[in-house]
Structures are given as C-alpha cells and as structure tokens.
Length: 82
Image (cartoon, rainbow, N blue to C red; front, top):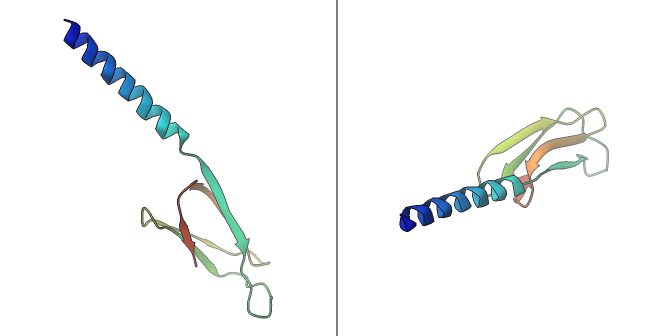
C-alpha cells in the first residue's frame, strides 16, 4: 500500500510541476519599422517572424508608416525577422 501511495504522490507532484512550467512560458511582442536605405518607411510590405526553435512562422503587413507588431509570441525563443 505504501508503494501505491508513494507512486500516486509522485504522479501528482509531477503533474503540478509540469503545469507550473507550462504556465511560466510567457509571451511578448515583436515590433519595428521597415525602412529603405534612405530611411523612408515602406508601407504595405510583409514582415515574417520565424521561430528558430519550432520552425513556425507568423506574418503581418506593415502599416502606412512602415510599422508592424506581432503580438503573443513566446518569450525566450529566438526569432528571425525578415
């Protein structure tokens, strides 16, 4: 009986730890402005951020002033933006 109780407690502890680690994964934003070599804004162009760990990509179109914002991207994950 002690063995079953010990295994059950270990399973519960592992489940709680896993849930805590999953909740610790935060999100952030990637933002910027796209400009040409002369420094002029480039509106209506596509910006893509690709997660270097997961290989997933998200795209957004720049606004009339060349600005873009990608919301809810994972923190502490490297992205390449192009």
